[in-house]
Amino acid sequence: MENYYLKFEKQVQNSRSDRLLLHACCCPCSSHCLELLAGHFDITVFFYNPNIDTEEEYEKRFQELIRFTEEAPFAKAVHLVEADYDPESFLKMAEGRELEPERGSRCYDCYELRLRKTAEYAAEHGFDCFTTTLSISPYKNAVWLNEIGARMEQELREKRGGESAPYFLFSDFKKKNGYKRSIELSAEYGLYRQDYCGCRYSREERERQKAKREQEQ
Image (cartoon, rainbow, N blue to C red; front, side):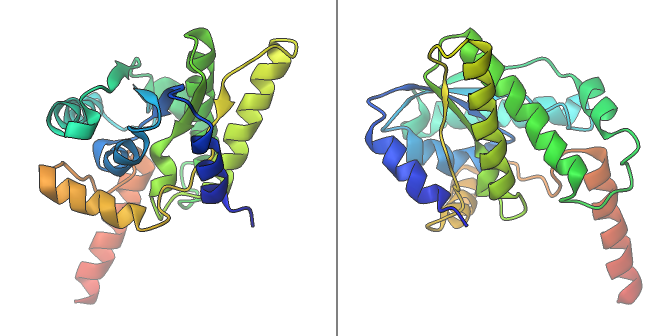
C-alpha cells in the first residue's frame, strides 16, 4: 500500500507557501489539518458537502468553522468559502443505493462528488493545489480519497491540454496521531462533534445501531 503520508511530507517540503484549497467536511476534522498545514500553505477552506441531510446541519457545521478560524491562533489567516447547499446532486448520485451499507460504492462516489467540485473550483480560481480533510477520519478510506484526488488532477491537466493545473496534495491526516489530535482540539475549543458523517443514510444507520444496542441491554 502507498504511504500517502510520506508522499504528503515530500510535497510539503516543496510547497513554498502554495495556495491550497482545502475541502472541509466539518470543523473537528479540519482542526488538526489546519494546525498541520498552516505553516506551509496559504489556505482557503472550501465547504462543499451536498451529502449533509439538512440545511440546518450544513450551516451549523460551517458556523463552527468560522468560529474556530477566529479563535485558533494558527487558523486566523485562513480564508473560508461556503459553497451552495446542493443536496439534490448527492441524492441523484445515491439513487438506488439508499440501503447500501457504509463504506461501499455510494461513499466512494460521494468522495468523488466533493473532490471533483473542489478540484474544479481550485482550477477556476487559480489555486496551486487542493486536498480534503476527509482522510483524518478512521472511518474514511484514505486509499480511495487519494486515488480520486490524483485522478481529478490528471483530468484537469487533460482538460487544459497539458497546461499547468492545480496538483493534488496527498494525505492521510489520521497518521501520527492526527485523529487523536483532532479530538484534543475539539475538546480545547468546545467544537460541535456530530456522530454521523452527515448524510441521511449514515444517520439512519446510526439510529438502527442505537436501537439495537438498547434492545440488547
